[in-house]
Amino acid sequence: MAKSRAKPTPKTAARRPAAPPEGAAAVLIQELTGTAPGAPAPPRSWLRRVGRVVLVPALAVLSGLVLGALMIAVTSIDVHRAFEVSVWRGIGTAFVEVLQAYGALFAGAFGDPVRIVAALQSGEGLAIRRAFNPILESLVSATPYIFAGLGVALGFRGGMFNIGAEGQIFVGAITATYVGYAVTGLPAIVHIPLALGAGLLGGAAWGFVPGWLKARTGAHEVINTIMMNYVAFRLSDWLLTGPMKRPESFNPVSPTILDSAKLPRFFADPIRFHLGFFLALAVAYGVYWFLFRTTWGFNLRTAGANPHAARYAGIKTGRWIVLTMSISGALAGLAGANEVLGVNHNLAMAFSSGYGFDSIALALLGRSHPLGVVLAALLFGTLRSGATRMQVVSGIPIDIIQVIQAMILAFMAAPAIIRTLYRLRRPAEAEVEVLVRGWGG
Image 1 (cartoon, one colour):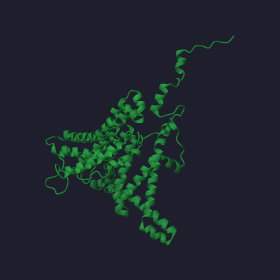
Image 2 (cartoon, rainbow, N blue to C red):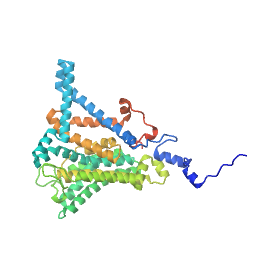
Image 3 (cartoon, one colour):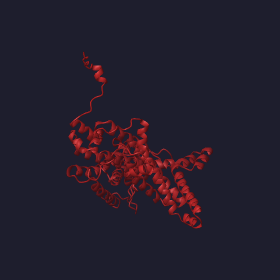
Image 4 (cartoon, rainbow, N blue to C red):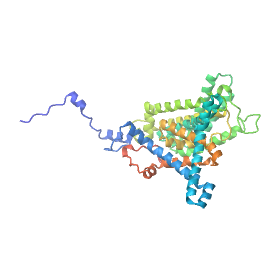
């Protein structure tokens, strides 16, 4: 007589894996996660996840530096003359030229090791500060990159391609400058947050406009933010030659902000390291917490990953488009406020020097993650800080740094090139991460 199958008890039922969702629920989960039915799950090992995320950007940086070295060798007159003598002499000269250039770049970014050791042995405070000043200058250069890169990365997470970070930096700098010199009689504990808040609101307002146009009319944010950049540039030019021009100056420059609005510096001149770097790190953590630890952040990422699935789940995507662009602009505005309140202490024409445009490459290199953005900003800051010494020592133009950054961006935009060059395995479908939606998104 066949034994009857025992009914599952609550304990045995709890041990059984839940059945995969079917029907509309399966479709919704597939849309939100971007994984196909039956696709292998991403690796669960923490080290494997970190390696998978870091490997391609690290190889992109390495490839950019290699191509930069080739350009240094190809454009060197000494290398050309050495090749006229013999091939081996030309190769040796090229190797020496590259080592000299990158050595000067390293010393300009992190300090001369010989000088650091001598300063430590002397025990003089001023000598020690000056020896370590290149490292601190790299952090100063990285600070606006962190703010602007976080803004662009958050836009990517929300499905928005914010090309307007440069204009938002300008507007944030304009509003922070005005509050910095026009509002008087306030203590520093009030004046500094007020000026930073003015920069934040200025950038947010400049990001709100293309976000609202995208949500209401469908106008693409790339076109709108590019045009808004030029409006911000010309607005800055007009203000600096008119209402905000320093009365006693013939140059287009604003009045110097009050001491109560300046971000505190930790050392005496000529060291410019200031509080803004730690504010940038705090903002980076805040962005991480917002994106990955709050319901609002989940809704923002969902609306960016797949607006159709988000609408199906009841998320109002138009509202999140406006919010994404506003927050993105606010973070970029903080970059402009940081430069005015912590470094320049006034506003001049073309003060930004491309921080907003570089932040696009920076956000891609950091894979639109706050931690990755901070690391990429430190890299870009060291390149920017060390470029001047490289030009002085080896005669290599500073523009080579922009070439290296462009190569890194190209490799990050086409990771298949990196995987082909270094023979990396092809990622599983579930491991592919979309950093930003395309033109028609």
